[in-house]
Image (cartoon, rainbow, N blue to C red; front, side, top):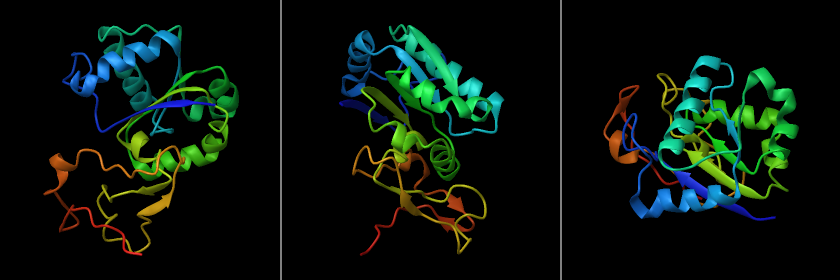
Length: 191
């Protein structure tokens, strides 16, 4: 089985505007959608239906104004997680939404997404947390108040295994931000 991966920090150019055209992103996505157009949007916020619906609609709208048309577009979150296997099998274009990395990882584990993707043939489009959770080993930089101060916060964990590359989206925007009184700078794991 073959998978086409689009792993992004953020594909957006602004609210209400088409996807970025940098690195031929939009033209490559358009070409992929010509063949793979049965979409499944998998959330990073499984328990927040309003956030999930807003994010899923925003991605669909942006794709459409970027020249992409989908045959079907479904959303997977807590409301229909018992249909995960069926929804993945019916899809050939999966969007892994952005949000809180550990929350999304937990949901992926609950629905058995790694195993469901073993025979998947199509496109996987990661946005922020979705891109991060695609790695074999995920680095989940603390992002919520209290996470960096929590000695039990797990920064490294197994991901979906779609790439060996660890992604850290939005780094340029957040590298000097403070969380729990500490600067958010990436530190390589030493072995």
